[in-house]
Image (cartoon, rainbow, N blue to C red; front, side):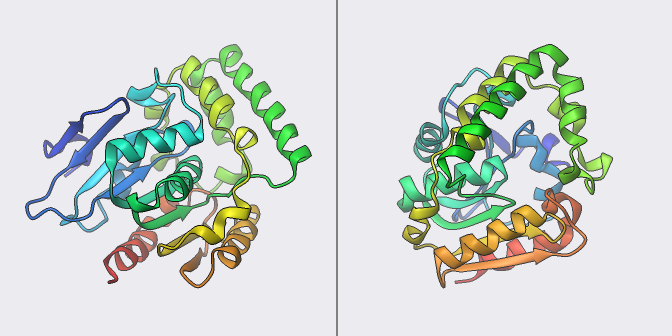
Length: 265
């Protein structure tokens, strides 16, 4: 069944739009955090491949989907999610991975296991971070000039998304986002606005799974560096024939990895 049409999903109370699927017998929920320009529904094809006996939550991030009216930077977003979702196994892709990392560092009692897909701990060099912040601001301004559909097309035309099948790109869902929401998300939660978390990675005590696509060279290098700084509780999986959207490009393989990781006691 398509999760989008599954009546077992219900809205969870709170400021963010969060849908949860409860399971008889309970259990630790898997909490899914999407990337920039996506929505909670972007996880639907992937979620269908996961263990269906586990509770799940999917979130529309600030500035996206049905949380388009919410404005929050990364630390504030992490606070909102921790308060609304509580204990869970947190799975974040790209921007969602950066948010999940903030949740794990700010609210470690809420994160049983952490999965970071094509994510980074930020930009360590202050000058590079400032340049990225300026670039993000220019990009945010361009959304209003182009309109959401054209901006989405240009965004997905980047080399990092070259392996993403059109059928998995969810363009129509992405285009439901608003100019104001996406622009504010870039300004508040872009990599340039994020404080570097590299020096705090050693604080992560929970099991951590890092997943990257082999052809996403930049994030492969980042993931190797993150694993070294996190320590022995971190595991790195590099998926062949995959780029930045590795969980959509090689969904079966990544789903199997995730099922094994989250079921390990």
